[in-house]
Length: 283
Length: 321
Image 1 (cartoon, rainbow over the protein chains, first blue to last red):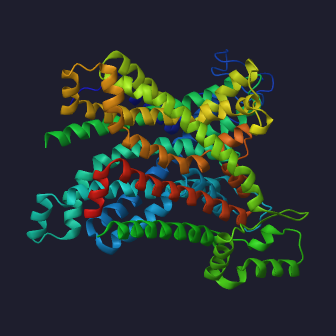
Image 2 (image 1 turned 45 degrees about the vertical axis):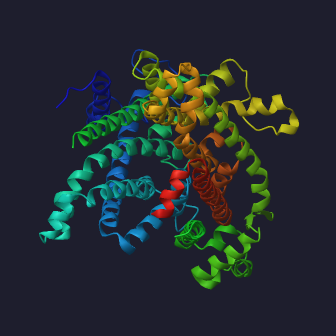
Image 3 (image 1 turned 90 degrees about the vertical axis):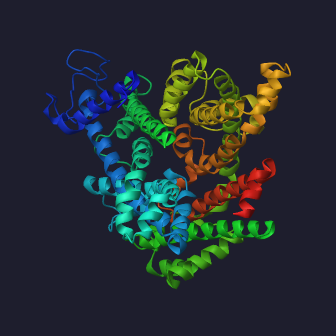
């Protein structure tokens, strides 16, 4: 395997740090993000005791950002794995079976794609998160589930169409025809011959999709329909808008974390894809 | 298959997608765990709610309701927004929001293309050299930064620190060009940076392919200058993908600008949708989403037709397919 370039190592390192924050953030010697430091309001960056400063509520930004990383990364990974799985199954089946199944699937994908991502996510969140008693607030855990479900539904047509396209380029290859003429079962052909070939393309897109979901989640939080009483990067940005005038670092911290993460996932997606292209070129 | 029946089929496909989208949203409203009439009229009497249900067609089942909504929508009746004091027409709201969104979108596209085309040409011409690397890498990073982050940073610097630009609101052109553009500069920059990166990348890739063609070698051996070859001979055949992508991003921009519109309070169509959702105005939501889907599908069709005219090869290929 060719050695990675320096930016790739940086991207892997940053995502590793994010994974560490999400999995082992609770091991760090930090108080809960919602602990209020009443004497330290709007402390600047790199102050003693508050590495990333505090906001006007007295929340420590380092604890907030560690908790926010956990939330944002969890939502992104959950939505991308669910959406990626469902989308690829549908896309691969559509491309392999062709005929009516394909027509129906393509129409469904087109319907999903003709509404802008964020509009679809917003509509789904608002409908799914409605309580029976409309005056009662929706509990946080249910908001998280609703958010993951909505983002999953948004991702299915995007990833499904890509899976379909990738599969189509393999189903007409000779080895598939050969396997079929030898009487191999369809399920086996898909699992043994199609999936391994389509997977790299899907992994490349999954990296990009993580970025899309992180941004979508943040957008929803800014619009006030994300997770209200939990910390996510988007939630921090939404709250930080109040401090925009006098303590802009409250905004810089989550924005930098979010942007670096999205840059890293996009870069890794590109790396996977270019490896794939060179492999294709050799065939 | 003849060309006419190809186009008829294409239009029929798009119509089906439109019908399914609007029907899907309509079904979504039925999925609400709460009665719609109660949400729309929270303090009304039961008789008033029954009357509302009958008026909207809720009592006719999912398909009956959808058909009634569709009939009204086609005739330009987009439904109402319900307040405690009365109602407002959704179409009046959209009439006010649409020009804002369209202007925002047009400025964004113009700015993005004006910057992306020279950058794309330059980075294709110097491909692999330092200028190309600097352009490609910085645009890649920029593309990953979401529009709202750029918007907030612009607000911090241009709006608050230097106080050059107003951070909220919208001014119509009738208030004067300068006032109008002062309100538009930050939203347009925030929306276009991501597009610039996409466009530059697409144009660069296509131009690099075109630069390898024989006719370029031919033009160079005739002694034409590099800039003439680039701008006159290579740019045009390479701009297909760029134009397609630009047209396709139109539909998304109208509705996708929700966050930017809400940060800058440029109340456009995106914001109308957001307001409908947060105010539980589900009829308004249904009609606004339909309008956006209509735009999206319309631009899709425009791309198809335009690409057939610009590049006859795609037209033939499709007809034969």
